[in-house]
Length: 133
Image: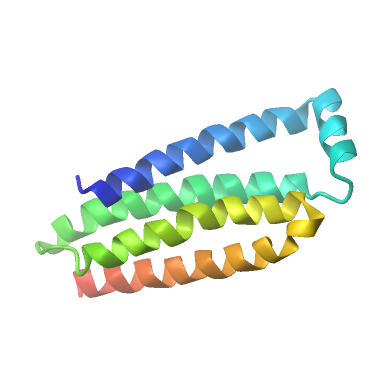
């Protein structure tokens, strides 16, 4: 596997652990109440959902796609550099979005993280599209 594929898979697993931990904390009344009391107005449920969906699900899907689709197509990935750029856009973007959801002063991180995540998705889809065409 390429280093980028491994990075996507490892980051996805790390986000799964983080999302799972946050889910457990949100399911227990004492820790849920403490989280909401410490950050009034925080949207912990949205942070949890984005950590799991963009952090785990998308990172794992793209990691597997970058490994498997070139083999199915019988040719190399269109651009390993684009895949690496996609990773470095997407991995911190998920963290930025989670921070933006939970800290009111960091709302610009939510927008920046969302834009970076979308840019990474576009880059990844175009890269994979050109690989399998």
